[in-house]
Amino acid sequence: APGRRDEVVAVLTRHNPELGAAGCLSYEVGVDDAAPDTVFVTELWESEDAHRASLRLPGVRAAIVEARPLLAGMDGRRFTVVGSPLRD
Image (cartoon, rainbow, N blue to C red):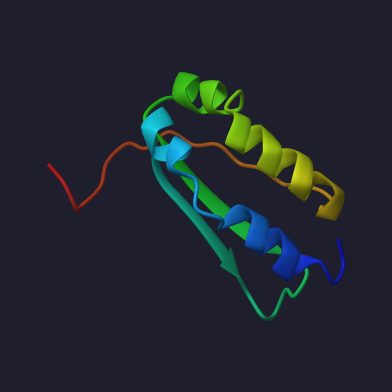
């Protein structure tokens, strides 16, 4: 929501060890000063099932409840990782 970016970032960047234990390989939160009301999140999961299961974790559910009223909308995209030059 307009003017709430920093609050959303604070919720999304709060330390949550449950995510790693649930199969989250990467969870990065970013901003762009040219889009002051936008927060970018990139998540990488071991599997779609691991992500789905994470949505039932108490800490994740609490963060969703806290962040939802701060959001004006979401534009999510999914993709399948097919490779990386960083690993074999």
